[in-house]
Image 1 (cartoon, protein in one colour):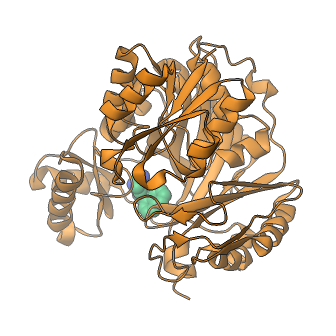
Image 2 (image 1 turned 90 degrees about the horizontal axis):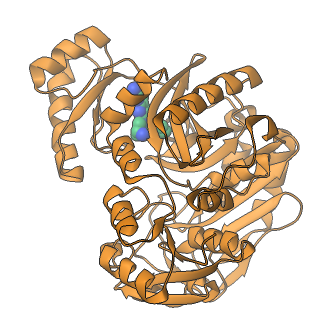
Amino acid sequence: MFKKILIANRGDVALRIHRACREMGIKTVAVHSTADEDAMHVRLADESVCIGPPPARDSYLNIPAILSAAAITHADAIHPGVGFLSENAAFAEIVEAHGITFIGPSPAHIQSMGDKITAKRTMIELGIPCVPGSEGPVEGVAAAREEADRIGYPVLIKAAAGGGGRGMKVAETAENLEEAYTMARRESAAAFGNDAVYMERYLGRPRHIEIQIAADSHGNVIHLGERDCSIQRRHQKVIEEAPSPALTQAEREAIGARAVAAVQQMGYRSLGTLEFLYENGEFFFIEMNTRLQVEHPITEAITGIDLVRLQIEIAAGRALGIEQKDVTFNGHAIECRITAEDPRTFQPRPGKIDDYHQPGGLGVRVDSALYAGYSVPPHYDSLVAKLVVHGTTREECLMRVERALGEYVIGGIPTTIPLHAALIQAPAFRSGDYHIRWLETEFLTS
Ligand code: MV4
């Protein structure tokens, strides 16, 4: 097992990884920007190294600085956390080239799943259902027209290097195809330095359901059920729940088994998530995430499995130690992503926390790096806390979320706690009858 892990991240995720390391008897190294000198992740770690000025590109994305920090502290592994360098294949490769273990999949798997066209092709070959669309990149307006006629309108033009919805355009009819195609290419080039695009049938009101998998380096693969991440705004998830209120046990087992078979055939190692759109009882693969995810705690809540510990053990070459039949799903979990934003306009509102009290009690977990007196810096993601609630039933979980939100005090800055409190009361959320466009087109407009 590793003796010392450098955590190349900040905030609640850095704390989450530190906690797993501490329980495993592994020393931790925090890295931080000059804006994060007083951050909780720096306080808790065994050692810390300043890696640069506040902008992420100069610090948390600064590969030479992070490698130097690992070298001078003699870290034997690097955990990239989520975001930042977590899906950067070049970083994973450089880390390994320095004789340090990258806690994640192989650079080749990060690379191939990062290209959405390659990812989709791979999944089709492995028998995973995908959204009907172009077989590869679509080059030129004439080719786009042919594809659209074959697929049927409305169609969606997507960036091969995409993710997060950038470079994605809908063409409702043949009339706006050319504009959508041209815009998608232009946006992709600007955002990713790669203007390759592909096309799919546009699904209007699907749910976003993702399957968590874990694969070791000995060929063992399990799935840990699904998370429903349909409650989102501008491609930022707001609330996630597990299990999905839309799935039956039979559907869960069927899609889980398919995901496991595909991942096994890919020779994939580490945690991973297969993202699907789900509409009218059908699953359509869209992307695979090759990292730990923000919403992993809801899976931990219903399975009782420490995913970060498992990820570290896998990276150290250990076998999973559990089989699919050992994975049991208990009750229901909901995560509220609390951000330092105006709950009505969603404008970021960083600043000083002058009062802090977090909820507790049965079934309540808070992953947050906040403390009274801390100043939320303006340079990074506005997520400040994940409220993760577990109950024996969805009903109990909903009541408990309401109770926990009521106890939560974050003073000095506005947060999205009031938004979550209102969302939890919404009839469509309570009934579980929602889809990826519900929050923006129905809830936030009323
Ligand atoms: C789609 C889609 C509808 N039809 N693909 C958004 C970002 C990228 N991850 C894929 N996305 C979508 N792909 C087809 N063929 C709708 C979305 C989408 C979405 C997907 C998941 C979660 C939230 C979303 C919000 C808007 C659009």
